[in-house]
Image (tube, rainbow, N blue to C red; front, side, top):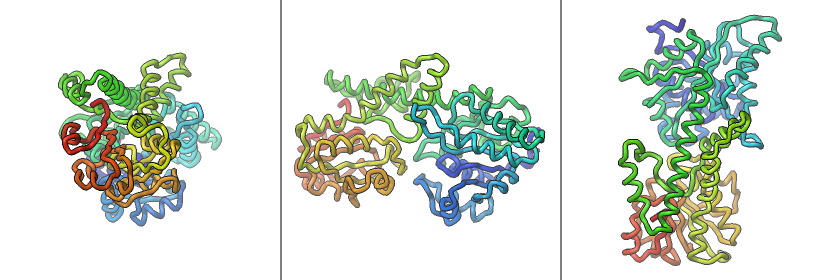
Length: 447
């Protein structure tokens, strides 16, 4: 069975991959007393992590990594032999980027499984932490079986699905205080090990949701698809509210008061982005198509989201005309959401492309994502050092990310700095009546 109760707070585990999921998971599991070894093939990344240099911006993560490294509970390595021999629990947290057809690319997951199969000398529990399509655990198990057969040995192992439900910008908090811990396991011995691993996170009440492996794999995709659906639905309602001269903020409060609906993910804006929702919605659709099932709702969710990313530029063109040649446009926010530097599929990228295609110059400010944006955009735009610096010489201000520092700006200074008092707010940060009283032309989403 699993480890004894007395050992539950000092388990050892290997995490394969030090990306967003792997690094947060490793640091948080070390924080509750486990001994964690994180494996990555990128030697420079491992060297940076050992030196306390974080590859991502995530509130609280740097201090967590530093504290647990100093305590000796968290280590980083490029040595595959060491990593496989280190622990019974082998957690795979490598990337699953979308392939050309939108399906999740599992080459890194399967490669990690093969590395384990080539080296394992005793019982191993392989935990799929990466977001993977239904049936991946079978592929992982087959890869390990092939490697063992190639070595001519027979060893016991189990493959478990343990998807993450971490919000970028609040990942450490989400991990340390989870609303649920989903474990998909068809092996009782492995189930007991996972129970032991997550015991420290269940002191107040049971959070473990046990199910079969395939259901756990689908649960992750279904959750993200549902949240993406809520976002696209509210964006569609916001567009309708504009046409009907209604206020989507009042509508949001009215429907959110229904406990069957609630308030979360009902904020309209310029579309969702990031590493999860776009990729996972596409991957779920590809999985469904491969099994002869059409997900019509998710087709509409994707189409609505793609269209919504153009909303800010459409509104600007309505104010300034189709050609923006000679115009300078200020953009507040580059990351796809606040408290992260993640630029993957950020709506700001669509906004910037639309502005540049129409001849505008773009002056952008973001508290953390300018470095990541520069890797994608180069010097096609200007990266301002502060929100006010981005406004200098600008004909309008566009807001693409709801950073806290944008919530209560100096509107008098904004009005003095802009060539014209035009704000197009893609995150509905301000009160329209108040802004108009101050003399701004203020255009938001659905208001």
